[in-house]
Image 1 (cartoon, one colour):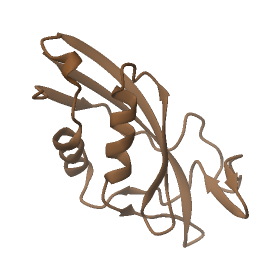
Image 2 (image 1 turned 120 degrees about the vertical axis):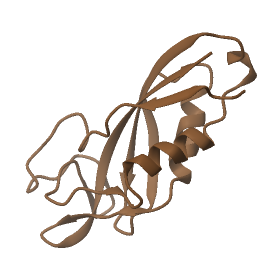
Image 3 (image 1 turned 30 degrees about the vertical axis):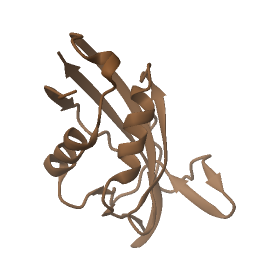
Length: 136
């Protein structure tokens, strides 16, 4: 199905709650800390406009949406790692009928981001991306 338009609402700077850069988020794996806010936040390497275009081109909607006049919002959380690669994408809200899984698939395919830094060192940062999709 051809996606008429995919409108991405602004990229939030961090997860739902913003914490001081000195504090560590409870999202931890082994000895690696995942921050929700750092002074130098991660950002798409090619800029937000190119990120939106990447998502627009790569999200494939199921045939069950064909002919539907629907608008929906999906909120996705993911981690930008120290090397800029995306991992651990998950749907926080929305994404029924397989839409969430498709968005997670495409988020995990995104090119590496510019890394987030804490005290000048690259760190893992949790990001939240609300996505609004409209199609006919």
